[in-house]
Image (cartoon, one colour):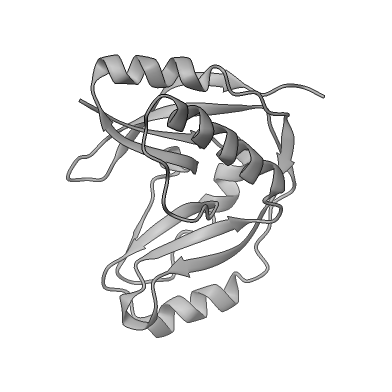
Length: 180
C-alpha cells in the first residue's frame, strides 16, 4: 500500500521565505522546508495497481500554466483547539480550476470525491500545545507576509510515508501544465 496525494512543489526562493517564518511559537512543531507543498487533492492509501491507474488518470489532466502568490498566514481550528498554522494563497481561481480537473480525473476512475472544501495552503507548523495568545501574536506579526508571484508549470503525484519524526514526501510523477 502507498499513501498518495496530488500537490504543487515550491520553488527554492519560496521555501526560503516560508522557512523565515519558522519560530516564535513555543510548542509548535515546524514543518521541515523540504516538505513544504500545496496539496491539491488528497487520495489516501492505495495498492500499486491503483497507483498506476491514478498516474494514468492524472496524465490526462489538461490545464494552463499560471502564476501563484502566497499571501498571509492563518490557522485551522478555533480557540484552544487551534492545530495547524499555514500560509495562504492570493489568487485561487486557476488553482481551483486545477483542483477541479484533478478531482474529476480521479472520480472518473472510481476514486471517491473529495468532500472537504478546497482550501489552498502550505502547512507551516502543527500546534498541539501552543498557547492561543502566542499564535495570535504570531499571526499579527506576519499578517503582511506575501511572496512575489511564481510560475506553476506542473503538478506532482506525491507519496507520503508516515514516521515518528513526521511525514516523508516523495514525488512519484510530474505532470506538465500547458503553456499559453
